[in-house]
Image (cartoon, rainbow, N blue to C red; front, side, top):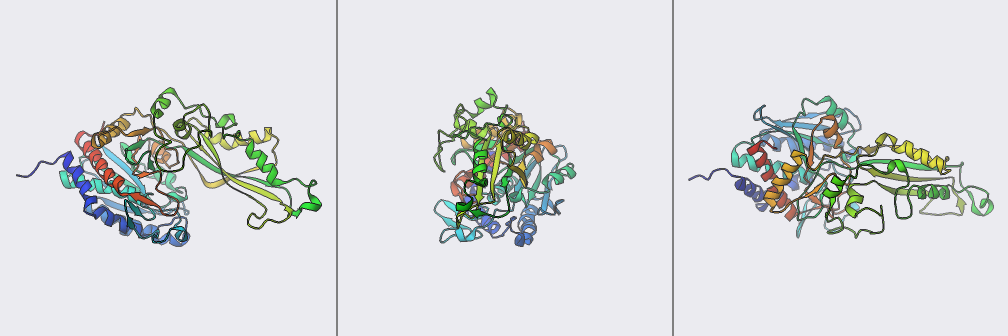
Length: 464
């Protein structure tokens, strides 16, 4: 007697894809594509990933797929695939990016290589295993498990895969605006970023925004002898250091009023209560850094943070006895909803002028801006996804109003007008954007089951 299709059967099929080695083999294939979007020499690989890696997998799942040129010449190609079972059914849009950060091949430890999957203990090493090839492969494999169990999904799916996320997603906003009808859906459910804890599912409904810019002081042509001219010539590094120090106090609390958000409501604070920000992998947090009146979770998910990413003056690798002519610092503000993105740099200009630093120039960086987005944690889709993940995991997921990092989520929430729910399949210690990037085996297996359960539930009930 043939067993009736069931939720448990779909979850078991997804987990079996890992246990059999099929998922690891598929991931091994994806990692071999050297899709460094920051490396112009690898531009052909970006298209090859879509045509040779994604299109056959999607066709096997009953999707029709098409590759589009990016409207921005700085961006890589994009793919839209769809499986429409019935126009009357709900439609899910999902997203992934097949490009990866620079390989940094020479920095990986002995025995590892960015474009060769290496299985070692409980880890799967390779560029893209965490960000983002492994994550969208999990979702595709889970869709396949539901199809194999039930013979249909019970909903429609559209998939958008871009190949320039690691360079700031150039062209993605314009593409979404031009292809609204092609990308039409009821909700975005996608995967990127890390879980808060490796053994507990996480969902987030948006992301902090980010703006990156240079602060520069250019005083004269050339450096001059520090003995002959010391005390007579202004030091650009000194001026810049004082300007930077005026932006926050000594514990990093922001001093620009317009950069202090208004959106940390009692409801958001309640949602952030008890989240294990200070636990798990990664460096120990500094309790005396950041906004003093806030908890660690509120500081990283509910507030803005300013960082100096790099700074230079003179010749740091070979200092000479000279007063330099210029100084520069690359800076970043991560900001939440409730901060006016159009006033971030004008507010900084006003602040610097008030503090007497008119000679400090602000230089916006191309591709250095992401908008902040956030969906209320009580939104029906957020509650539906959280309940489904909790059912499969046997424990409630961590629910974040927004990710601490930045994603092009406004393409989906603002341009396409969708509620957005992200289910990350990585963890904070995965070394994404660094040498030795890796995925955890147990997390991958867990995520496969979770997503199969979620897709089963959407097909069973139609969503919230």
